[in-house]
Picture 1 (cartoon, rainbow, N blue to C red):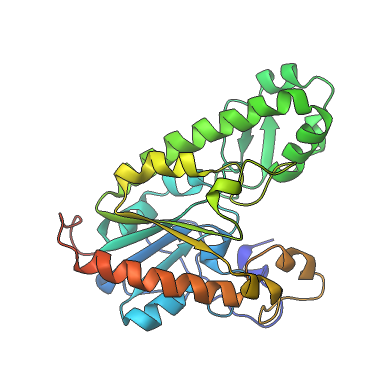
Picture 2 (cartoon, rainbow, N blue to C red):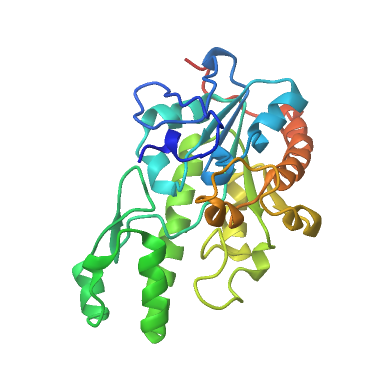
Length: 287
């Protein structure tokens, strides 16, 4: 199923492509000659089910062009494999990089689809040896596979989790170094990063990422912007989201329009400071 069909209801994502990238991003397509702010991230940045995701709200408040490069279920891998997308981010005046979960990346234990990073392609020989009792041929998605490993082999599950954390840290450093210039790292979730590792099971999104991992990246960014959805925003549930009845369960696991409004309010202030702060320019006009 193509991503532009995944939103449900009558929400038009106006899917578009940039440069030679095969990825479909949320439109309308922007004039890259004028792109001041680029947003990289996953489902939240894309704004699945959200009529006006936070990149749109920020653009309206700042009165500056913002390019939404969010991609549904994206992991870090999908952006590292797209030179055209990296070029846009590198040349924007400021780039906002959403913290994405660590589960949707290829690693020493398993491989994911190069573009649809939530798709599980197969386990490595090492993983099959460590988890001999699990038949990995039955899995199609990373979260389902990891949930099964966590439930059936909790004594060894930490090996995979720790591998993913290390891979995430290394690839995030590569991504941020590749983009360069002014970068804001965005934590957008329903909890503080301090709480990420104290929960049972797989834990909340962004999966496996905690404050220590964020702080390791601080020297590479201008600021780490933390947006934790308020109780009032979370209580609204799917109110204002555009989804079918069948998609309602999926929508309930996501942050709604009220949370996106809160994110935009925090981001506007951070971006205003970053845009006015003097620093080394990025590598020329977008094109």
